[in-house]
Length: 286
Image (cartoon, one colour):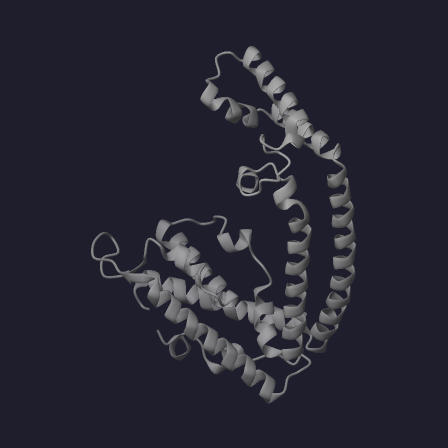
């Protein structure tokens, strides 16, 4: 699918003089980058669609049943985002839906920033460093207590030292209170089947809060949990300081290329592309 030959011209990627770096070289880089991305999107769409063999759209392109899953496996975030946008808009048109929440809107990000990373090497380095710092501290903060102090069965089963395991002596006070709590609910609600009792508790707002408070009271009674909280706070402060330095550097670099103006110009190009491609798929012109 050679989108660049059909769906946009040289003028479609032109930047206004509002952008500080308006050199021919910079504009050419933007054009080449968009053309390359659009070509990748064309390849991605080809891999997740096929002509319908029956039904109202017989002979026309339809998305494969596993298209959404495969789209989210695309590593390039910009290509993934735009391909998903085409997928959602195509379904809206086919289903006659005027408005519905798209997945990109729920989990959206500044997608033009993905292009900016490739247009500015220094910005890419700063963004990569920011991502690295964020992942490091997330791992450190959760690593301190995720397995040890989590009441989620996934983490409990995989850590014999988890404080909520029944076979851990430290948890005896908690389970004594828990068993009394559940026994009391059984008396109050004798008609609730045993097999659905915990789901009943979870669906009841007041009971859910009581159980949450019981868990927190138990954790607060553990000296090691108090120490873990101190470590979490220390790590959070440390992370905030490092991220603040990086954010200031990123802001300065974005200012050097007047990023907000650049974003306002690239966004309509992408939106027009999505509209053209999704409509062409529906009409059979693609």
